[in-house]
Image (cartoon, rainbow, N blue to C red; front, side, top):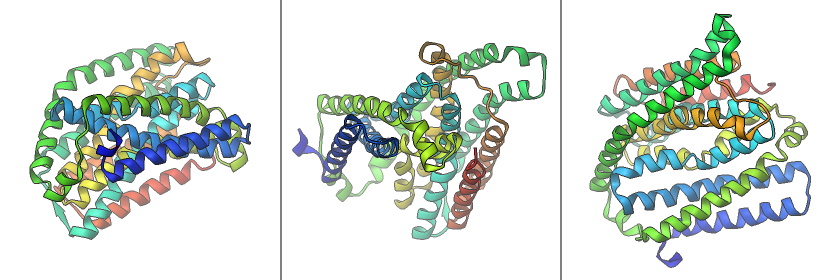
Amino acid sequence: MLNRLPVSERITLGTAAGLFATAGVVAAAGAGPVPRFVTAGLALAALAALVGQAIEHVGESLGSGATGLLQSTLGNLPELFVALFALHHGLTGVVQSALVGSVLANAVLVLGLAFVAGGIRHGTQRFDPEEPRLYSSLLLLVVASLLVPTLAIKLGTPAAKHATALSDVCAVVILVLYLVSIPFWLRSGREASESSTATGSATDRQDQAALSLVGAVVMLAAGSLGAAVASDWFVEPLKQATVSLGLSETFTGLVVVAIASNAVEHVVGIRFALKAKPAYAISTTLSSPLQVALFLTPILVLLSPAVGPARLTLVFPTLLVAALGISALVVVAVVYDGEYTWLEGIALVALYCIIAAAFWWG
């Protein structure tokens, strides 16, 4: 089965296996918190990439329409595992900042890098803005829904005494929204996949080796299981490691955890931009933060009583809320005119760096 994989995927598989083994040895040897944290983080990022590649193969075997939904939903499995273990250790603040960081990393950082890559390589990129506008508008609407509990509590409304109940209600409503949106994701994924296949080069098609559905599922299961184990290794020394490295827990969740557990999503949009497919670059990049907001966040809110000593609510720190809202508005602004340049990409990356710097001290 392995000899049927393209060289790039064999490298990913080998790298993930090697880093996972290294992290296991370091954890079993009882090394200090920093080596355990770093090696587990690297293993988690590699396993996230492996899960992403397996999902692509499973989607191709089941039908192109399912690829987008599988990519954006199951691609968040490593982040789900990290969040569950963090909640088990009582690191609610890390989970909240990691959820916001996942949205920021994709909607601001990765989108900016895609603009830079596509703009430098192909110049000003123009595209049909219909689908990117829809994705950015949905992101803004979902972010607005997530902000309501925080505003209700921070403004001292009568709901301030019922933060947990309000969060649970919002989580259920958002999950229902996710369920009714599944037909849209399936249709969107089918259209993007078919267009990508039709316009792909012969070299790209020759480079993709066929992989059976059974083989893809086995690879997905192995990657997911490895990610679950690596997540425990990653979270267990997190608190001590952040102190040793001089990082705040909020910065660690917002930047380190978000990037490590979302490795696969950080590549897809940039790849489309380099292939001069700006509309797909934007839509693919924005689908991941939408799934984080629509699926991962409410699921964690509802599961938190069973896994953690403290409840996870949708009441976020004020600065996190402000960063989330500003980012959603900026994304709508940059995609609305139907074109982008490398300068807009640099501005987005700069915005991400400024937001990250604001959380350096906590």
